[in-house]
Length: 144
Image (cartoon, rainbow, N blue to C red):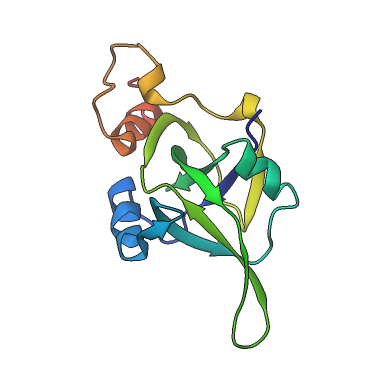
């Protein structure tokens, strides 16, 4: 069973903005395309996240609306001797059924039962081709 993490995309205005911010961080990791971000503390369940093909679910503008598969969680040390965890992810941004969530500091584990389904897995026929940001706004207005 996948172990996932939830994180606020600080300073990010939209899914497209997240894509733009991550593009300069694109690189090859173990033969596949990847992007990275970092966090101060490595999850204690890091092996379960990587081995179970977990994802990072992003909160953007109070909407949990997108996820990325986590490929690796290596520890790194900076020039001052501080240890950081690099979160290496697939560059693919997978839209999920948007849920309203408050911002938070750092990251949290996200139980599989609480993880929203991918939009592609839903067959609602109600705007599946709309951008996740627009779907979240329509839901907030009670129109979806």
